[in-house]
Amino acid sequence: MARWNAGAAYLGLQGLGSLSWWGLLFAQPSARRAFLPAELPDLALTAFLLPDMILYAGASLASAWGLAVRAPWWRTTLLLHLGAAGYATFYSVAIFVATGEAVLSVVLMLPAFLLSAFVLARCGR
Image (tube, rainbow, N blue to C red; front, top):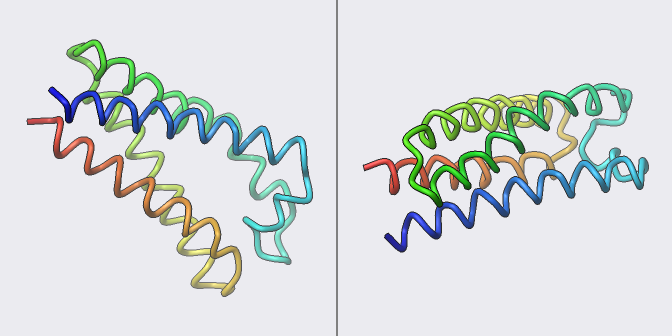
């Protein structure tokens, strides 16, 4: 029971954190440069806004709520979230490997992806 509550809390915080991160990127456009190699335009990051809102932040928040109320669909939304998180993580790793830049993207995405997978593994039994 406690692991379900912890999982729901983590997913809720992750979803809210993602929304806050996007808020920062639009309130302080200069912050975008920390997540992009120098040669890429801002659009290479901001194009992810809509999919991120729905598939990453949205699915994380939906999973948190579903897990908290023990809804039968919470695993499905968490798998959707994990797909988005995995894509963003591997995209970030690929950018870093190719350019040696934007390591902050990897530092933020890799633990988020792994912890979400851990929630699924621990609560999905």
